[in-house]
Image (cartoon, rainbow, N blue to C red; front, side):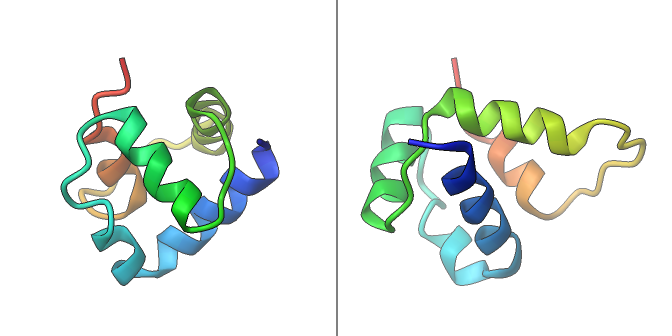
Amino acid sequence: MSIESAARFLEAVAYDETLRDKFEHVRTPEDFLRITEQLGYSFTTEELMALAKEQSQGVMIRRHTGVWKWLRGINWV
């Protein structure tokens, strides 16, 4: 498991709507991680959240589309 794998995943999913569609019905972290593992990525939810927090620092404007809105739709707790 690694931050590097999470970074590769976020980059891929940012540009690939078909990849995002694979997560359309995901509602739990367990389901999310199961799909990412099937796609060849290996990271924990903690690693993903740390990376998302790091990449979001200093962001003042939030778009209503894209990866971050999609990730916020999952109940991470």
